[in-house]
Length: 214
Image 1 (cartoon, helix red, strand yellow):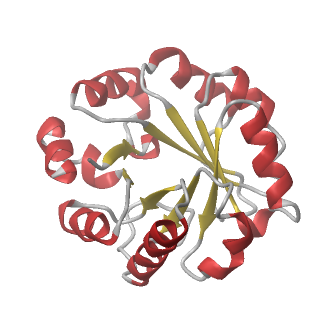
Image 2: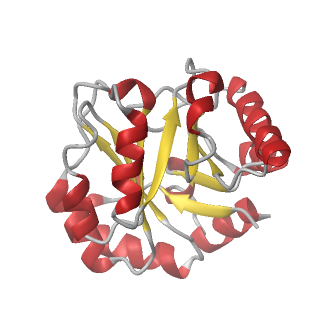
């Protein structure tokens, strides 16, 4: 069954701890944390102190998505906080294989993020060793955007490559995920679905998570 990852950037930061516990009770599987530096993407989200506070409250695994230049900068800090998964953009480093190994050597899962314009071919050399690939179905940096359908073809392509080569990576999707697009992504082969605005604005969080899981 597909796993649901609420994006905490869409939560109410005045009651973040309450939202975390409420979303855990609703049946979420992991929490997705978007880290933005205002350079790689034109927005700033939150940094290490907030991630540490989240780690102290949350009982679910944490999935950190680095939308930053120099994505290797704080890997050890995230590891100390107990983060389970870290993904970075292929464009953000000249040494993606080295960074992938650095993350994995510390006991965390390493992921590569593909922007809407980034082809799957750019990571062919990493597919045998990578733990997961995050397909962006919106342009990174802002929540609440409309789903970009071209991402579905990437999901299908990665799913086919996985089956043909017995690769072990998971396929994660982030951007414009609601009941309808969740179904489309699951059918294409996605394993992990990130949802922010749709989940947190739902009247019944448990029902919303359940519908997305299908």
